[in-house]
Image (cartoon, rainbow, N blue to C red; front, side, top):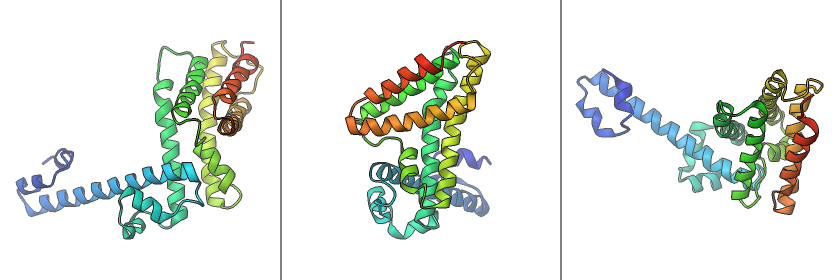
Length: 228
């Protein structure tokens, strides 16, 4: 019996077509597990949206649960406490960033330099669609929680490192193709791009325009990421 194939139908009545009690128990357990994962994912998605807008300390658990339509008692089935929830929200943000850039990274029609440019342009489109609000959730949380929680600090460092590593790999690929000068230090430049971008996002929220982000891109491509 292919239990996973039946589980993919995500519907209860199929349980009655199984032949044995053990089969029904396995399927029932699988359905319950999927429901739990779905509830947890929904809680993280809604919580990430609220935290992105209001910050971690100004977001209440009850507010998140009400917005997600999740019973209050369910929260501790998925998270140890609010800090654990916040750490998993950071993982959610990392996953979102990865999902946005993956098609760009895998696009064979783009050069390494073209991929860096497309990543930045794509995020300008995202922020423009949101009226230049919110900013980067990782940068926001770094300013809010970086000095207050060792666990948050480590998780946020992991997030920033993951962003910088993507740029570092693309810079090195660009250097190998002669697109980017070999005189620049790939790792230091990658972290500079991340740090400068976060600063530009703060300016963006004040100006309510894409100008600071466009200025960031202009400087990066006209003064730093140039052929040797």
